[in-house]
Length: 391
Image (cartoon, rainbow, N blue to C red):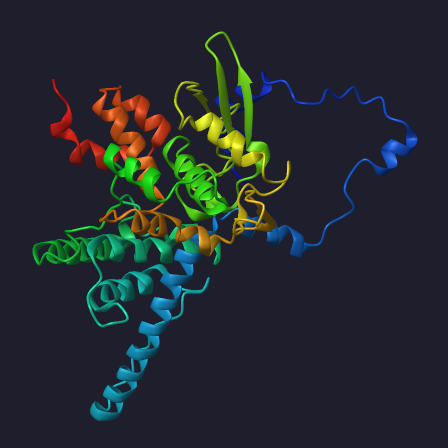
């Protein structure tokens, strides 16, 4: 039976959308030629499926494959064990089913309850509690998105069919925590003022392409909150603009879809992607606005932001290749910079954003304001930086 229209539409959202002007006004006074060629040519089902799959972020798709692969490898090993036991005892073999659209809720509950107890990492060690939960969530997303079975949402507390599974998972996670598995997490450290000074002394150098590339990467992390290498890799020159007002000159970062803000159907109506303004400090020889202007003067005016740095030419000029820096190279930037500067610790692309959040938290900015701007990093700082606040 079809759902009533009232249940299918969020009328509050629909009303808000109706108040937003469309970018291009349409008066529908079309010529006959325009009427004939207005719309895109008919698409096939393969194109439709492409768009359905493209809505899933790459990292989420990777996590989903991890969950299914782990299940399949466990299934293969367990089914062999079951066959051997059947040969030895004469009892019927009990087979684990594959994760397909035909799987039934009761059998999924039965086998997942065993899976969360028996699942192991490739080295034979037990998964940490959060990893085990993520493993289950990956399987749930696969069943929903790839098998079209949203009814098998076993992580939903209101779904009584999977109460046994959730109780088993809860018990296993608590046991893992008691044993100290996964209780210590490796987290990206924030940069201190001393760290930044060392980077300027040993890694950042505006007279060399590599030193300049390191510096703009660092401040893209620290000032504008970019973290994952994929975000940096997708950055384009047109996402930075330079303007001025009564206060002075500033650089504006114009955000695009990110890991935590993909846009799409369920985004709040009228909500803009992140835009951040940073003012120049003319008296500061390390002014970030001047740094970005210097870097952009050496690379093409359009296209990818990160270009491969070249060795200094014989004429002493800073030069960059037309070639874009690969994502794998960008992933190594933090380690290369800190190692060159003699800085010990665990620093990643997240360190810049953690530094930004730490600085705001120490200055006692409102937590909700920081949370709105920097999302997940604040959750960690609520715990780790609590003693820093002087109240």
